[in-house]
Image 1 (tube, rainbow, N blue to C red):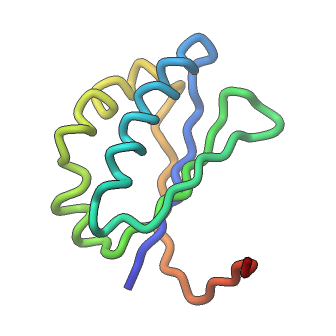
Image 2: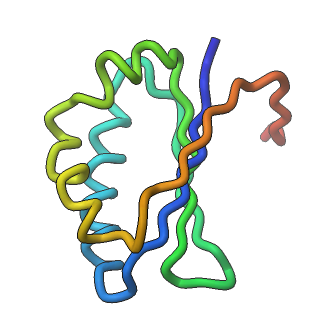
Length: 103
């Protein structure tokens, strides 16, 4: 069963450009993983420095065993303490229904 992660980032305003650059590299690389399903980055309309990443994978076990340790994530993970005002908020969700517009 697939799994979705909701990850909230409170980015230091002066580090937003670096945050986007590093995260874009990770997202671009994730797209090539066979167990990757989708990722959507959102910005809080009330704050230019608060972001939410919606990320879906085929398997939580695969994410914890393989994906989290991919070399393309190293620079991203190393930079997080300097990019963020505090720890990421991470929650894990299992989908039970999906509705999408056809067309």
